[in-house]
Each structure stands twice: as C-alpha cells, then as structure tokens.
Image (tube, rainbow, N blue to C red; front, side, top):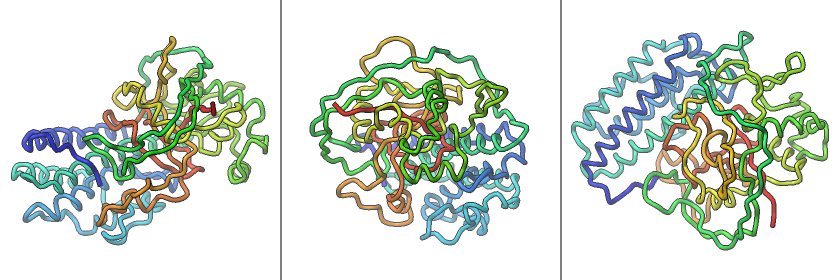
Length: 427
C-alpha cells in the first residue's frame, strides 16, 4: 500500500508516528470546532458527507485496520458503527449508502466524540505496548494518518458546499488579511521533454497508485508559470464561453445545459458585481486569485478558448520537480486560493496548494501496478476508470500532504472541491 523509510530507527519512527498521529487527530476536532451540532449532521449533496460522519469514519478506520486486528483485548466501541461509518470497503461488510449519510442523526455527536476518545485511548495503549519491527502495523498507522488528512480536506470542502446551499450564507471562519495582487497573464516555461521516470521512487510515504515508477516519453511542451485566475476565467464567461458549443466536449456540453451552468460553482452575479461563496462567507470575487470549483469539462473548455490545452499528469510532475514545496495550504490559514506572488521566476509557481490542478490524463494504473491484498487494496485500485487525475494540492490540503507524485482523482463533472487549472501547450 505504501513505502516506508527503512533507515530510521524503530524507536524514532514510533515516536514520529505517535506525534503525527495525535496531531492529526487533534486537528480534525479543531476544524470541526466552529460548527454547531446541526451543522455537523447535515449533508449538502450526494458527493459530500456530514462533518460528524467524517469524524466517525476516520475513527472507524483506525479501529478496523489498526486496533481490532493488532491490539490484544481491544473492545469494539459499538458493533453498529461498522455499518454506519464504513465508506466503500466491500470486504469489511455492508454500509450506509453514501447519499444517505445525512439521515444518521443517531448515533449522536456526543457518542461520536466518545468513540474518538475510546479509540484514541486504545491507540495510546497500542504505542505503549510497542510494535517493534511490525512493518504492517507501522504501515497501517501511516495509512490512517494520511487517510485522516484527506478527510480533513473533505470536511472543509463539504462544509463550504453546505454553507453555500444555506440562504443565510454562513461564515465558517472570518478572513485574515492576505496578500493581494493584480490580474497578470504570466508566461509559459518551456521543457525539452525526453524519457522521464514518473512515479514515487524515494523513501517516505506514498499511495499505491503512485507506483510503480516507470519510464515515460514526454514530448517538448510549455507550462504556464501560474494558475488561471478568476479574472481570466471571467473573460471566458463574458465572451460567451458557456454558450459556445465548439469549445466543449460533448458530455460537458450536455451537462452544462442540463444543469444550467454559466459560471464556476459558488459564483454569483449580484447587482452587476460578481461574488463568490467561500469559507469566509459571500465575498467579492478576487480577480487576481486562482479560479476554483470548476469541473474538468469547464477547465478543458477554457483551455480550448485560450488556444492552449491542459497538461498531462506526467508533464505536470516533471515541472513540479523544479518547483518549491512552499504552498498556500491549510497551514497558511487563508482557507482560499491566493494570487500568485509578484515578480519573475524561472520555475512554475503555485504548483502546490491553492487549487488542485486538472490534467488531461485519465486516472489509470501505472504499468505493472497491482492493487494490494486485503480490504485496504480497495483504497485506490478499484476506482481506476472514468476519472481524471488532478495534481498539486489546495488551500485546504493539510501541510505535508503535498508531493510531486501525488495523484488525486475525480469524475469530470465534479467541482465542489478546490479544483482549478494551469495551461500547457506543445512545443
């Protein structure tokens, strides 16, 4: 499932895992703290999940894959929770249908908090007993940490979806002063192409879908030095981009007309002014900030309108190797995409953080890929059809969760995540 560093002393690794585990567990509760009990049980749409469900599911993950099989005498908190909080693991058993997670008014929020306390106490016991050279135990803990980080991002995007559907337009958190900037076109950075090694090859954590590393032929290309901005995308909107069939893939054209899409998700035209719903409430549209909440179809149509294309995931990875990991991610506290830094640069900026970047690459297994055995083998492999790869990270991705080889994936119609784009072209 993952790759772990083999040159770190077992005791040091256990200490590092302990610190990261409980920091991660605490952060989930911190992210939920601004919400009311009513906020945490509601489900905005089929793709989203209630905050209470996220808090319970990540706890169920540790109980199911770490504690129950490895901690002697561990007592399951509540047998019914397996049905309520399993997500998609067929080998573990039946589950509450995803679109119906919002009807789980029971168990109560108090029960879910008690569940987290119960599992956290057992995890402390697990560490106190020591797991020596048990690579499987270390791997299960590492997976659990990264899994909870993924759900922290989902919690915030699902809260935004919920608050955007509320006519009161609630504010999750007050905005902090952030850098501003003017809408700039940027420039294209050229890459010579060649035979490149793609995928995770180093030590440290990686999901199975980032492996095996393999050689890929990449033709010469150019990549924009920055993300497409709200201002640039607004030009597309005002130029009739959503009314021009020749810009759209057939499925996308059908979708936007069925759904009535005429702008990115969460954009609103109010008395002649464009605004956007954010985690800070309904705000003036920041023209210099990266556009977010666009589907693959919208990203592809914009690129065609601009006379460019979306990059492949392999082009993106090659370019990302030269980019700094510094990112506007969850740790910045911005909770929204920010304008690119001013000034010239010979490496692409905003590669990590701000918004996940659509690529033109279908989500498929790498050559030689084999899904891991057991229920955890369902984590990635069974979803490798009908989706597209996104790279980079977003403004609500937890710090340390970004890397050049990370492959996120969504269906082309989805746009409630912080999804944006960067332009590419052939050379």
